[in-house]
Image 1 (spheres, rainbow, N blue to C red):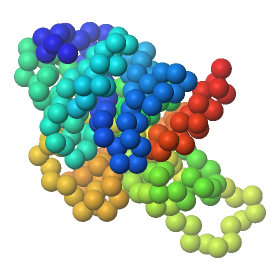
Image 2: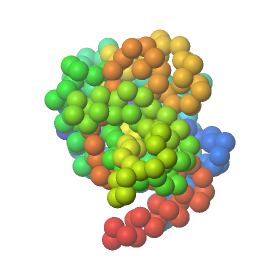
Image 3: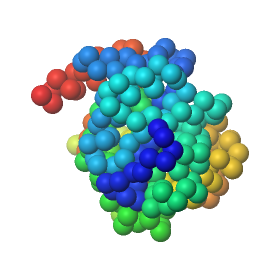
Length: 266
């Protein structure tokens, strides 16, 4: 992107999609085709449908070329960073912060580049929540209500959250099954209720920049969940519910799961 290019539609917001070329579990996964479309292109196009100005943030010439060829916009951040949020924060600081033409941007949405089922209405819902509750939280995200103890509840690949639906506060995030059900016997017909975290984040620009100054925290390192850095610094995380079924691509076999969901939507 030319740093002098001006964003428009939803003027206070910009959506940044971190897309790292290297992946230890799935080599070049951002370029993996999903029904013939590279994953990062599919994510970028889905996000852009929300009307929020959208940019892919990458360290890769190959990703840059493919996204640009498909009509998307790219910001290069080749710096060594530890997390996707750090890459997004560096991009905002380098390309937007302090520039007169972007002074209208006060909030940033971070969409993971490996979430190809991200929906336009979820981004709109999160943006509305940020507008309504912007003074109450430092970080905003999405959760999905779930019922029953199944393979996903027990999986460390699915992040669970201790969440209060009444006031929208998130108390903790974990790869462990939370809440823990102490009773062995559960009343007949009772369903065990939990919340799945959906890895889409929103921040005020001030909160995003502050992330760069926070040291990696113990719980963040134990769980490998960057949002815990915010919680350990005493910051507040708020969430709004979605019923959308999203499948994060971590391994090659996840591509088939995503394509199965897409076929079911047609």
